[in-house]
Amino acid sequence: MPMLSPTSRGQLSQAVLDALRSGGTSLLDDAPEPDNTEDAQLALWTMYEQHHGGFDDISDDLEWDPHVLGVRRRLEQDFEQTLRQRAPQAPEPGDFAETFFDFVADHEGPSLSAHVHRSATEAQVREFLRHKSIYHLKESDHTTWVVPRLSGPVKAAVMELQYDEYGAGNPNRLHATMFADGLHASDLESAYGAYINEAPVEILEQNNVMSMFGLNRRLRAASLGFLAAFETTSSVPSRRIAQGLDRLGFPPEMIEYYTEHVEADAVHEQLAVRTICGVLIEEEPALYDDVYFGAWTSMDLEDRYAHRMLEEWAA
Ligand SMILES: [Fe+2]
Ligand SMILES: [Fe+2]
Image (cartoon, rainbow, N blue to C red; front, side, top):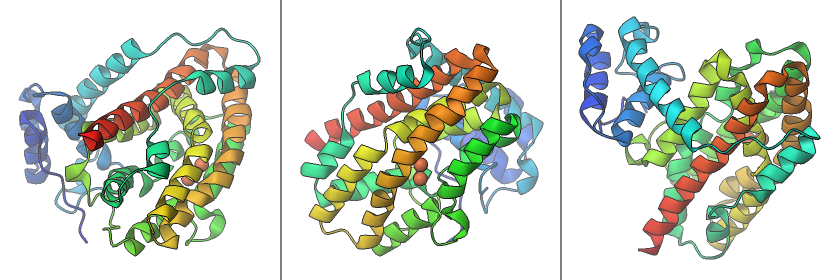
């Protein structure tokens, strides 16, 4: 299935899509303001996607087009500023791992995994899987962008984690491939990006923040903090989701993606917190606040998605 560019959600995303599809990118120097957050986030997602798999209806030559990058930069700055304004102060430095695990444990947010575990309907879970496919089908790729920007010890630890995420040498065991197999077995579309037009703004924000942190060297600590919080909040929810999928009779391939993450992420969280972020902070103490900024962003954006879906499903 070809990967086609998405449907616009406002005048800015329309202008970006028109420019990219036609190649007439100089028009973007007078690009309109976004109509709203969703319009801005879809425009940003489309531009970031050029650095991932790209689109069949957009020329690869435009990946580093200066007019496109100008719009991207403006949207990134607004997005980063919004996130930084929302983020709390980092906790007082102490034992890094202990402080970090407490920070994550003390965070309170709505739980989608508890809903999936006990009471979600099959239709709700299928919607959840379609939304999550936007990330899981390119799982971990954003972290790979950070690798060349790290010292030897941190790089080695990130690669140990990434080796697992990419299947440890087995092409059937890449987490992204396992998710695709799960979708396929569940009679859902497993082609990357197939469900972008129904992705809510919170899903676009989650995906965009990962790309933004990964593609900007100065945000490398935020990217690794994001990773550490993501891994730390994955193992227990993955078990709940696996049990929920089992309760609803989903196929074993879909369940296996989540059971794989129960074990794997219990290991990954230790690696990400102690050997990745802990060592990074020892080497570069000035990056401390950004590790927490990234960690908080990971939890906050998942809360926002959970909040939206629980409200929609309750209605
Ligand atoms: Fe994974
Ligand atoms: Fe993981």
